[in-house]
Length: 532
Image 1 (cartoon, rainbow, N blue to C red):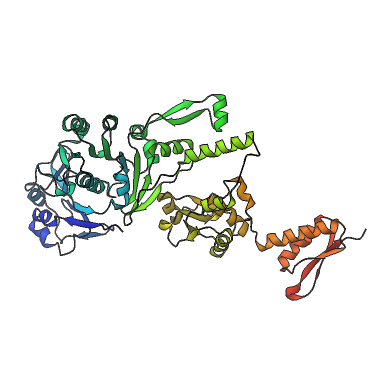
Image 2: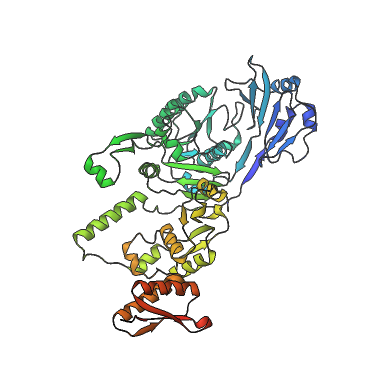
């Protein structure tokens, strides 16, 4: 299990605050705080990680309070940011139209370790990694810890391109949180692209770490670095890989997108329109990691494959990893594209030589028995359990959607915008819908969700279990066949009244006579030839 630990320099931040605000800070208040917000004419407030706000005292912030703080910190740069030397705290200014500072946001910087334990096996692969995620989910924290890991534990030459001293703190001496990595400060954000290139040309790094790639020129600088064989660890504006692909200025980070016109034969072969979107070139980053929240990451281990699948509308599911778990390197499985090619080649081989085929039933069952966690919503749990038992598959029904690999829900809730489906979408979970809570319908959807029907020979395994009503109708059909072949009459198994009604209607459709016989729970139908 990963061990997430925090260290901070809260005392140094408290020292620059006005006395009346200091007095209002009680012990433990800032333990989970994200920032202290000071606006002239308003009460000073502390924003806590859970969304809660605590007010500091009963006196509003004055211009003198703002001046008290600004006199104790370095001058603000063009992006209105400053800091406290030797710490990771960041202080950002809000100015009025005349340029006077009327508000401050004091962001509390912390050294948090253990947040990359779950992706350590990926970081040590020597591949370029791009992190995506909304503000405040910990992208910069992970860059800081990766810098230390790669510099100290792997012994590589690491240069951190530090815009606004976001990664290694304020002051000339880099914060110990980045270990032995070197830091190049970027005085203003617009110079970040230049410092990135300068780092490569002047300081022979093996790894470059950069935060918030956000302009087209910075995207081009990142590609230049990657083409020189330097490992690049970076974050970019954008919550998801899908969003990044759709951003014209940023899509080059993952290979770029262009519109291609296909010939008639190729379009027919692909089963798509003649104009399609395709990846232009090799991605700058080999791996893309979406930070869903502080404890959950979605990992695309092959950026090329992921982008190709998204552009072609093929299903692609990232690997979900939890911060408090560890993962070991494994022999990479075949990609979705490779598996598709294998299936096409196999079908082509069978078409050329239908007799050249051998199906190992046991091996196929073993291949689909990967442990899966399913969350069900408005679907009969007892029926799902029964199907899992009959199919003999390694599937677990979980109580929380966050722990699931797959979600199965009733179709009535498909367009309801329910919270469960919103969470499933946020965690990139595939969602399958059942129309009814019948055994046959749930079984069909479950088989689709687990890809049990992908191999046509899977039909050899008797898994098409039916509910009681379907079995009763099948029995009636078999009895009708016997009577039509010459049998005088056939009695069916006892059934409830609603089922017997359907059996009567089925017999009538074949112009056969049917009557109910027996009493109580033994009430059943006898099917016979009608009078000529």
